Amino acid sequence: FSGTATPIIDPLTGTQFPNNVIPRDRLDPVVRQVLDAYLPLPNAGSNLLVLQNRDIDDEQYTGRADWMVSPANQISMRYFDDDNQFQRPFTAPNGFYAANDFRNRSLQVRSTHTLSPKLVATFSAAYSKFQRIQEPQAPGLQTLQSFGVNAPQSISTSFFPGVRFIANPAFQLFSGGGLEQTPRTWDAHGAGVYTTGGHVLQFGADLQFDRVYTLDASF
Image (cartoon, rainbow, N blue to C red; front, side):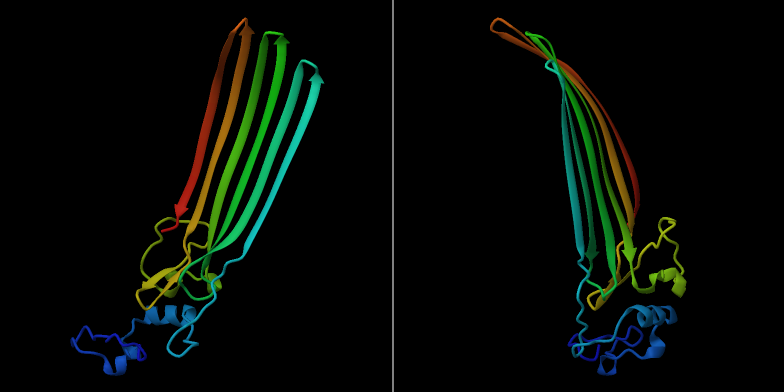
């Protein structure tokens, strides 16, 4: 902190450290290990300039099929697929980011029946799945616990849980946390339209089932 104007105060004496430099032997040994492994030295005077990780890869596909079974019966199908992968950056040195993978799938089938000149019935079914997976990244994939930090993870995971080491306003070492969200929806719909004279009668029924799976270790 020798290049900063903010006085760094010694908590033991209440006075400023000489030249704003904290003696190395006053730093916690665990903190020294974390800083040596994760915090690069300044590369622009007393500042550290970094380029954030921001790769984006998005692929989308859509498909459609229509089948006329008979003049009185038509079937249509729609499919949509979207894979969106990107790096969620943080205000941290290079290599600290959260790799996000969004996967969106949907399928719809519709069947239309002309039962008579006055009655038309439509039946449809749909399925959709939206999945988000976030995997934290950090240089070497070392947890704070591996450096000797005596604090358990908030949630036990089978993947790298991420790093959160905040020293505001000076710097932060942060990579987010593991996260998975997977909502699914099943939907069935039936409708009919009956026309007689100057009147139109519409009727139908819907059935929907939703399921959500969530694993949140994102701090």
